[in-house]
Image 1: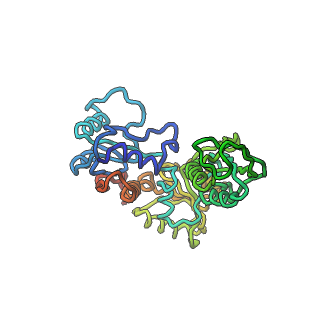
Image 2: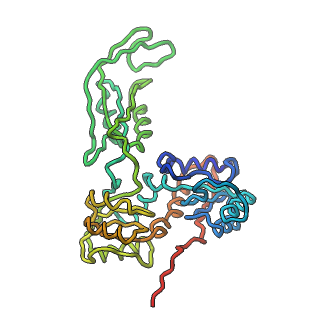
Image 3: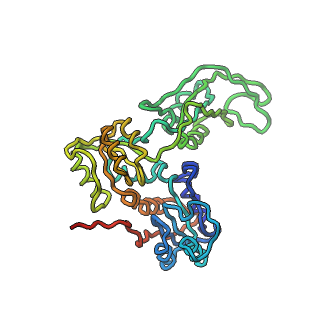
Length: 371
């Protein structure tokens, strides 16, 4: 039986909870982790209309981007919208999960999905201030290059505009295999000394689990030893934004039409010279004005985002960055598609996968009127 908690675990694998901002509220918001799930509905918001649609279509779980419960609530009653939604969901045994800033930040999350839609190449985080760990491993000389190369392939050693960054030096490792051990070298009961390399390498926190599993897989020892450090200067923080390159340079007006088509938008607001050449594109889903400075520092020609205010647009233009204000909804409405695709592809605890549907009751709250 597939349960709510199993689906929550799969969402956490895609978008780990530690990636969420401190102010955010993600994960299971309503329901019971042990409730069974045969059908999942996905939407941007847990509005009353969406919850009604989920119940009417037989969903046991609703996955949304924006949290239903954001700040603390003091009561749950049907006299207000949130209370009414919670009551309806529980009465119908409908659980609700939110994946918000964690999926904005995540590799293969919402911003990467948008980057793919806009056909960007060489996509990177829109910030050099990401959290890194220093991994230190001890590897026998005979296997050093094999293990180091595998760690590079696992994502370690990337920093700024460089990759395969590491430091190493030779030393002697000692050990005595005890009863029950299965040493790659040495004899039970006798101390051995082996020429080893100490390898120091930096790794993005998001690649850490993969790095450690690769280290254990490729290392010849039964009990590989490693140390993990948090250098003060590499603490950093995650930023839910990306930057990459178009295959073909185009004017701002051409790119705006291209972006509208790829994001399936009727219109967007554009700030900047329509003839400006666009090659390097920054993208931040939702409200992205905070990324104007980072986009300028990293040489973006344009920032695609939502919820841009007038004076923020002025500041962007002064720093040389054009803007496409595609709207909060416009840059996040692909969330249901992303989650549906992901949950369709992953493996489950039993052969029959849950049905996953994109709920249709969601649309932009804004309408465009012309004279």
